[in-house]
Every structure is written in structure tokens, then in C-alpha cells.
Image 1 (cartoon, rainbow, N blue to C red):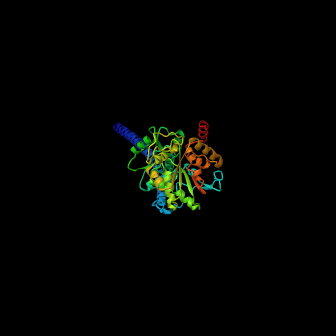
Image 2 (cartoon, one colour):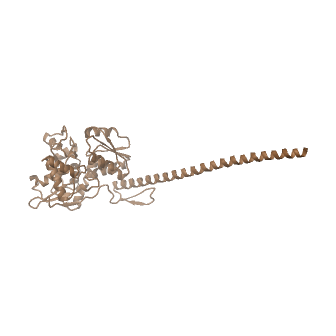
Length: 399
């Protein structure tokens, strides 16, 4: 009996030990499964993170290569080597602006065999000549280390700055006044720029933009920057390359950036005596009034519909050039500018703003001042903030 009881006790102890062992195995199995699940989750997270990091790195490398390409072009080199590309990348022909057509216009031709040539800057990708100077300035500021562009124009300059920033891979902030049209804001946003609306006028928006500048920002002025003038001058280089030597140039004036660039281009070609007819609309004629007063004056307000010419004070450089270069100031009405836009749309199948229509109005009107010149070059500066519907509305309301 004693032996039987001993065997039973031994069996009970063995069963208890077996139960404990099974419980321990089950616990360890559970721990191992949990660890395995955690490991799989971590591997998946790491893999996704790795993919995201690789995509980010690829984008950064691509942007770096693009910036290197533009820097090389700005420095006059035709190729660049980057540490990531591992090979030469060519930059020949890479510019933000395009070489625009130079065409002779029969519709605008004057009497007695006068030729009228159109430099079609309205065909620049953002729709105006502004891209030449602003694009060149953005490239230069990028080369100097700028990490963001800040503009204060709610018009074509702001649109051009936004376009340049997108093409260069640089963020852009555009501060616009409250008077900026919904269409202009839509066009700026389309170029992926940030917009801040501030103030009732350009002056207030400009002051706000200046106050928002950070150390790595570059301020892109709408018209008052030597880099802009150098960029705008390239359109005259193209005219010379096409074999045309104009006897006179007709262009529109707002703040004077286009005037400064064209005069710089003329002088670069040795055409120092070629007169420039600087055209404004009534109510935005800051250059004309400044020349009449003998000093730079500030208009109390802009009353013209040609808001792209709406600089209340012309730049110092433009005012100085009006005295050192043969510049002739002309002023036309809003009605004449709008009528010229509509007529030009019929003649050339192209929509431009009244700011551009001001120059066209002078030529369409066969201005007597142009009569002595055989080859007249007209800068069709363009502009995209006016629609056909607006032009028709202005034409009707101002009859």
C-alpha cells in the first residue's frame, strides 16, 4: 500500500510539472508570436519609411540638379557636373523665357512704305514680357543662395515670379493688395505660389512683403531692379540677331522696367540714338507728368483701367533715361487702348491687356510722331489679367 501511495504522489507531481511546463511553453509561444508580429510591423514601417525617404531624396537630388543647370547657364557655362548625376548635364538653350517671334504686321503698317514689326512678348509662358527680367533675376538670386522668392505684385510680375519659382523648384510668396482680381490670384495659385492679401494698394502690399522677408529670401521687385533690366534687354538682342535694325521703338510704361531694359538693350547693340516712344494711359501717366514737372512726382491714385501700368511713381532709372536717351512720352485714353486690344485680337488672334493696348493704340492711330521712321518696332508686352469679356465690357461702358 505504501508503494502504491508513493507512485500516486510521484504521478501527481509529474502531472503538475507537466502542466507547469505546458503553461510556460504556451506563454513563451505567445511572447514569441507578439515579438514576431511587432518585428513584422517594424519591418513594414521601415520599408515604407525607406521608400518615402528614397522618394524625398530623389526629389531633392532632381531639384539640386535643376538648380545646378540654371546656375551654370547664368554663369555662361554650357554644361555642369553634379555629385549625384555622375555625368555631364548640358544647359545649352535652357532659359525660363522663350525667344519670341518677330513678325512684320501688315495690319499695323503705316503709310509711305513704313514697316511695323511686332516683338511678340505676349507669347512668353506666363503671358507677358515680365518673365525675361524676373526669370533672370530669380536665376541670379538662386545662384546667390536664395531659398524663397517674395513678390509684391498682384499682376503680371507676380505671375511671372510664381512661374519662375515653380520652374526652378523654389517656393514663392506673393503679397497682393485687396484690389487684385480673382483671375490674377487664380493664375498665381496655378503656379503653386502662396498668396497673402494685404492692404488697399500696391504700396501697402509691398511694405508687407518687405516686412515678411527672411534671411534666405530674395525680394523680386516688379520693375525696379537692374537684374530685371538686364533680362528685359535680351529681347533687343533677339531683334538684332534677326537682322532688324529699328528706326524707332514703341513700348508701354508703368514703373519703367521695360523702358529701362529696352534702352539697355539698344545701347548694347550700339543703337544709342534710336528713339523710344514711351506710352501711358491717362490716369496712369506718372512718367509723362514727371517729365512735365521736371521731377519725379507721385500720382495721388491710379484712375486708368490699365492697372498693369499703375505705378504711382516711375522709377528713378526710367526718369533718368528719359533725359539721357531719346525718349518721347505719349499718353492715350483708356478707350483707345481697349479699342486697340480688340482690333489686335482680330488682326493677330491674340488677347492682350489695355496696358499693352496703349502702345498698339499709338500705331493703329497712325500717330504723326511715328511718320518719319521707316522701321518701327513695337514691344507687344502682353498681359494675362484681362479677358475678352472684360475688354468688351470696357469698350461698351466707355463709348
